Amino acid sequence: MAQGVLHLVRSNGSLMTSRTGVELVVQRIASRSAKPGVDLLGAVFSTNVHDLVADPEVDVILELIGGEGLAKDLIESALAAGKPVVTANKAVIAAHGNQLLAGGNVPLRFEAAVAGAIPIIQSLRQGLAANRIDAIYGIINGTCNYMLTVMEEEGLAFEEVLAQAQALGYAEADPAFDIQGTDAAHKLTILAALGFGTSYDFSALYVEGITQIAAEDIQYAKELGFKIKHLGIAVHSDAGLETRVHPALVPESALLASVNGVMNAVQVVSDGAGETLFSGPGAGGAATASAVLADVLSLGSAIAGQSGAAAQRQNQNQDKPKAGPAPAISRVAMDDIASACYLRIPTVDRPGVFAQVASALSAHSISIEAVIQKEQPASDASVSIVIMTNRVVESVVNAALKELSALDTVVGEITRIRVAPTH
Image (cartoon, rainbow, N blue to C red; front, side, top):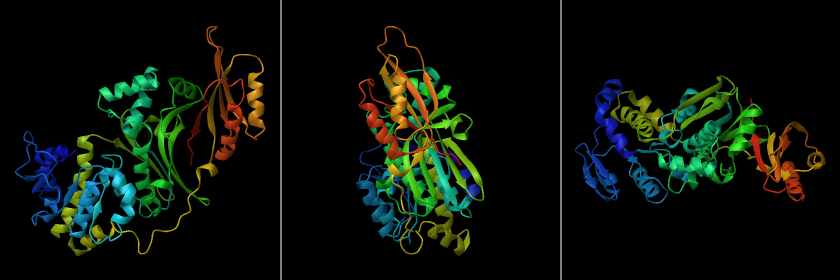
């Protein structure tokens, strides 16, 4: 990512200056290890990141370290010294955003922390500022979206696609951060805070990854008119704010259903603008560097005074939380959220099993909207019953699944995928 920033400054520096009036000079670079093969654009190099704060020639500090330890220390030191910070660090903002933004007198920008090159944070802060936000839905992890796309297009098993993603560099050697949903949850924490004016509360999210999704689930979903996407969902209603990350069935006609591969997309539902979709590369050095430099140029305009004192105040104020603590918005517990569900239930292949399953669901007042049950080859000892339910509260579904799992005719783990909410 840091090299992506250097590349864009080198190749597009004159273009940036002509558009904004801001000339970017890379004054100092700090890294844990030397970079002998990298063109540092004449910058002073050191292995102590706090040299960035101490250098009086440095106006804006870019934190591109990642993680929460040293990165958080650097951000805190810079802000305390009165130096604006631009970061791409979603983890540190999701976990410590309330603390880092509490002062608000020194700008802290983090456009690159969510959805790469997509200017979603600027859009929530400014472009949609006149709107009441009702919902935010996001495909905000490129690794998961890539894997689900390949599973759909090639019919490959999860482990095969994961190995392919790792070989292509879309997934890390340890992919847990992505495939278990943590990365997307960090990003949704930020989107929810900005969209609904609440606190940065990573702990309030329900988080589920894609490890339980099988190729057959994707094919069954297609037969039912859906695609499976890994979504971050934030919905504000009279009951409060839902914040959850999990796989979801999206109607094939929906805008998000057409976002494939490593692309990201964020759909915002608001009272004035209606449904707006922001889509683009969600990761990669160039995409992230583009978002980082957008923040730097905005700050540069304010620092240079080229937009006047009013612009300076605006640039500072947009980083502040509103006066006083963030509004108290009640969070809806996952057990209280209602959604339609896809269930794939592995059962023994014998007469009467479907009636047994239907009876168990009926006992919990869960209606069946659609069913797929296909004949299996004689060599198979089990058959999958695929059911689409009506919209039902999560706690009720959990109780029904517990009862179904206890049946001696159910011979494996039941897969449950929620249907994405619609507006």
